[in-house]
Length: 328
Length: 278
Image 1 (cartoon, rainbow over the protein chains, first blue to last red):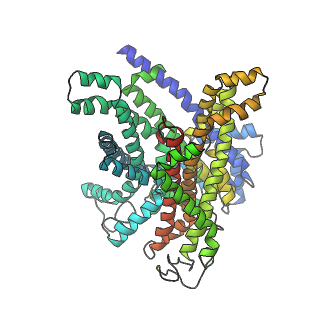
Image 2: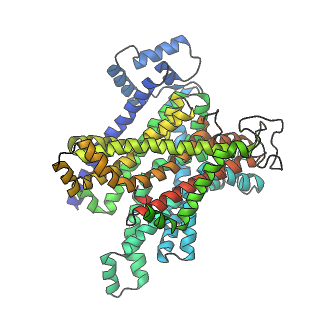
Image 3: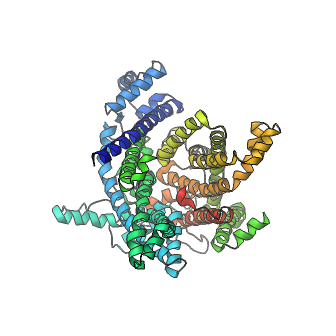
């Protein structure tokens, strides 16, 4: 067992050496954009606001805009490391504070969407592969096609019009009822009620990915030798299918979830905009409107770091589920 | 070519996809003759529901939704095609260089590719368009410049296996130059996966442009479906039609290109699995 955990530890270190340069790359990217953007770099650092000359001067000083570029890059990196992502004029708050305030709402939305999409997607995919080219399989294929092609924000708008406004079964906007002040379980239920439409909207595209993946992965696994062996041992088809095949077919879903995290975050931003969900998406929308560049650029860094961390965790989980991967 | 068409034509969803794509192209091209209104022209009748004059209704400024939907096909298809073309050219150059020459160059290029594959592309596109301006040409260029990694990886793998083949050895033996071997001998053989990947990229680029526009980064001087949905968002309560029709158009065109991509994949690479691997 000690040997086992050593291998895992070594693998973690190896993946770490991949992750750190990626984060650095993102920072350099941001830095390059600030300098490539048309006009004075100060515009990207402050946003299109009427700042006092003293403030402009202090930002110039902080980022060393009069000094050589490598020094500037160093200062930029140092500022980010200290957690200083600049100041949002629109919101009168430090950028990092603004962003971190919004992360939990987005993660809640994404978590629920991932959960329902993975469960439903895997289930439909398994049923699909069980009876290839049956009516059910064709229906699921159609669902997947729709999920792939549907612009997530339009699905949101249509559901909002139908089930939020025309037949107001679900609340149309926000995360909580503003008129009542619920506490405890009642508050949880209220949030859940608000979550239904956004989570369904966000999850559909993801469900399509999981469905197609599970279907093809099940079909592939079922043709492998160990399945033939299991059958030859006289195990019932049900046991072979659900116990031997399903487990191996589902492991790659972990990777699919991890790899699609960025794609899902983009979907979350669009979904939140439709439903006025108080997460990163709404912040992004408002910042674009206000030309609040420091917040936009800060969000790119924070989101990139989130994606890189999720990829790292995915690799770890996968290597625990399927130890062969560590040797590669 | 004919054989390919026969294979493709047997696949009914793929044919339907092609029909959707061609249909929208035709509607976009014929837009000036199909409606009496111009998509950006404001009119006196705001928020009219669909009726005999305004078949899909009007928006808050009295603009005709139908003409927006028809003209919008031009923008969406142009964005999709040009962005996919840009990213495919970049992807082929990088993938070919990495796969053909191998060694340090390959390592370096693959590191860069991995970086661009991992970073959340939608957000980088968004930041760049916000900083550099939101004309439709910027949007095309930025999406194109950032969407090449999938193609590059694919081309690299093709080149890695093809460069070891006898016909490449043969042309090298008779003294063909590297560019000649790459362009005349290897690239044509690597074509099928490139075409499939490009057609799926079109769908993605269209969705991305629509998403950017929906967040307020669309080109206000173009009739874009995403911009129409951005405007519709404020009036969902009053005017469902301002959102319903442009969104339906995006949905169908993206589905069309997805079906074409899947159909090409089945016809060109019958043994390969589809997009799950991309």
